[in-house]
Amino acid sequence: MDNKYLLGIEELDSQHTAVFAMLGELQNACAESAAPEMLGALAKKLADFLGAHFDHEESFMGAIDLPNRAEHKQQHLELAVLLGELVAQCAQTPRVGELEQTLLESLSTHLLRYDAEIGHAVEHLVTRLRSHEAEERLSPPERR
Ligand SMILES: [Fe+2]
Ligand SMILES: [Fe+2]
Image (cartoon, rainbow, N blue to C red):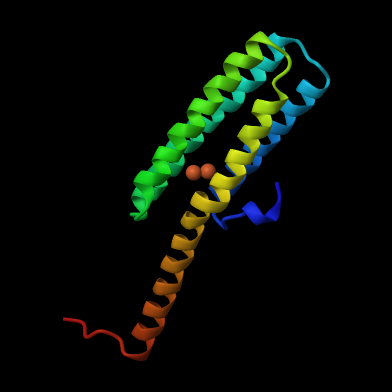
């Protein structure tokens, strides 16, 4: 996975890496004109993994109280629809290159626009925590 997609959050980064790897697998199978059953199975594996990833990411966004998470969630729903179409098409015809490309572009845009916000929010929280710790070291609160 290209470094531009890294959020600095280990769990989400490794899930995103897995998503790109699965998409690559699907693209290779497609380029090699694999059987529709094989493509369907790869697309289903990707869709299942992404579904679980979206759930995980949404729960994480709730935990850090990310402001824009309703819109982010809506984007996940739209990506899930696209994935559903891909799964259906893969199972019927081995020519799914165009839809794959659309999915790759939509995922890339999503990561850079929406998932990046999660990375920034965590960075901001860590910065606030560090400055709070520094302030406390300078003037510790009175213990009662
Ligand atoms: Fe996301
Ligand atoms: Fe994500």
